[in-house]
Image (tube, rainbow, N blue to C red; front, side):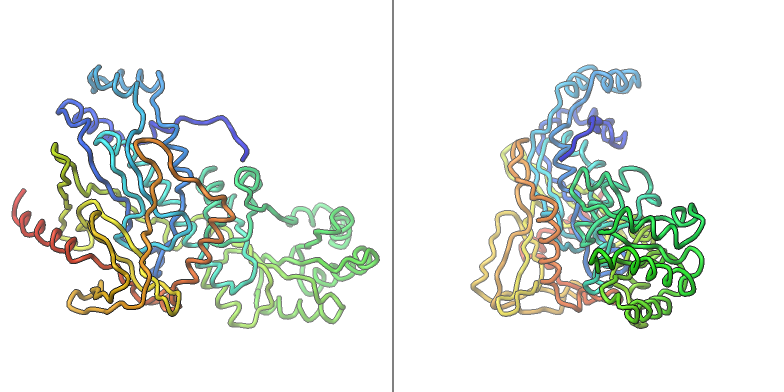
Length: 485
């Protein structure tokens, strides 16, 4: 992987992480072991699931976590922090444990994507970066997966760099879109850094640069005969664009025996124009010529175009993907779930809210996914206390997440623990798969979801159940805290 000069991102944190850290230090809590869960509360766009992404960048961040001399001087100048705390920061390294769901895994609300076990200051300090990374890349991977599923097996390229909200959003957004299922990108640096295949053809400016559309097309085909995709809507798609493309294909490509070529449309009635263009190309003998389209596409527009009989082989999806325009916030949160007492026992912690959806699941937990042995499909997810095990040789009864009085019996299933160890005592113990492996894994895991869960509108609610032991702990904490500060 190509490398560039690294920017120290340790100071990319909310300022209160540092003021709380100083307070923990002064109170003698710096070595107190805490457990934090990173999770989200609602799927974007009203979907049935999301896609986990961003773990590799978190690993890189944790490995490089340190305060520079300049950072310490900046903090000293704020006149808020003790010299002892500043010295602690000068020697700072992450020493805790992290578990995470692998990138590309379909995930559901209220289940931990990442669990951190670390001394209080360490666990608190990394909150901002973990959230911004998971929130951004999971959002884009989720949107990309929706777009790719709408395309029904047709090629989808991410075209959004120029509309992304900053360089990192373009580069890492392209990475996340690839995880979600896009076949490639227009972003060259994402190919250089991550191996996300970069491709492209021409802009309208290329066509306008020449004295005629025909000359522009002919010049391009002469230079790039093996990659000739022509933008046919600069002037008039059906009257000049497609006819000129056919003429040039006949003059330049046909004598070379080349049949691989394409046209692209970036405006107009895509359903009508692609049907007409397809007939014109086929009648001229260019049956292998691919038709690609772009211009403010999303999963719903793609779905409608295909329902209307559009003849499209490839979609270039830009601003509505790279910004997740329809719902640009993933909503991941990072909450304290437990602390360790001096005797090593674990004390569960809970956050209570009048908004029921904001009440957290306490304790150090394990996350399982149940797969039907007869279908291979995911049946439900199961949260339990860290010291519980699941016996998948026996039938289990789980609760409907929408109504705790309604149960479902799970039988003939295999239970798989979803989170894997990433760091142990500050040391990396996880081997990151390459991006192609992550993308393939994502496609495989999405295929294991029932179609009802994958609906764009009103998807079936997937079961995420708590074990009886975990539910009892949560219920007792709610009772204890009711009316108490």
